[in-house]
Length: 151
Image (cartoon, rainbow, N blue to C red; front, side, top):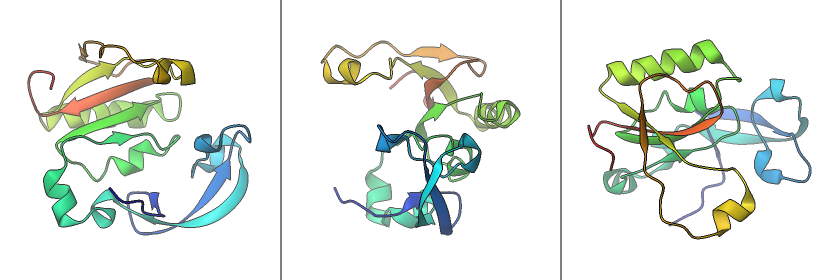
């Protein structure tokens, strides 16, 4: 495992970083319209420009949670993606991406999450994945996989 000090994006460059909630630095975003305070400008690269070929060859799962910038990141697809989908950010864009992934052979599953620190810290058996045929209307973690049964 290694840490890389860059933002994840659809193309190389630099992105402005905005702090939306000063009590949660993890809610920083590169999405200007979320109304955050500018805090930095950072280097950005697509996932395939961050991971080495050896890392890509070992990759079996990716969770994308980039506070509203998921759609550009999805332009750099791999076989299994876990993404935090928020249709409120761009409903038409998310519908389009959902349908394009399905047309490319991906199957979508909802992943249970309560987005709460206590929920994440309490061990529990994994919840069963629920296959979805249409983009959920609410904020939801989704697994996109080319496997026809849940991994």
